[in-house]
Image (tube, rainbow, N blue to C red; front, side, top):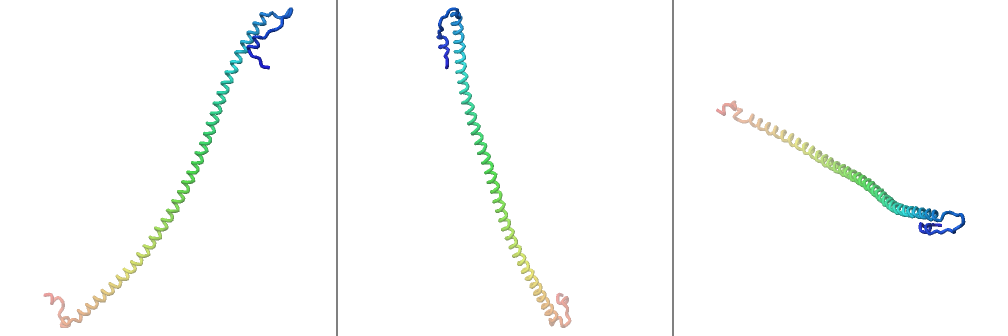
Length: 160
């Protein structure tokens, strides 16, 4: 059974012989009624504070949940970014390897072609030197067989 301060204040008692002093009982009931009213107001204020506090706590819980979700998302994004960077680095390394292999193959082909060209030029040089020697030998023999030389004249006398 719930009592209100007004019910306490309005409560009446039967009068009995040798009972309590009615003025004292009424004064006490008035005091109890006022205290009860103060307590009811305090309870109402505390209940309102409790509701406000519960609302604030719920707001904090929602913020906490949002922060947790944000952090989880940030961690996922960081992990995805790290994985993407790793994949990109692997791709760059593979492309660099392919490019370096291509460059080395081209360099090897060029080296081989240059070596062949050097061999050809060396062969051409040997052939040229051989033909030049043969040419010079032929001219030397021709000069030695020249009729003026056979007469005993030397080259110095012709110059004079």
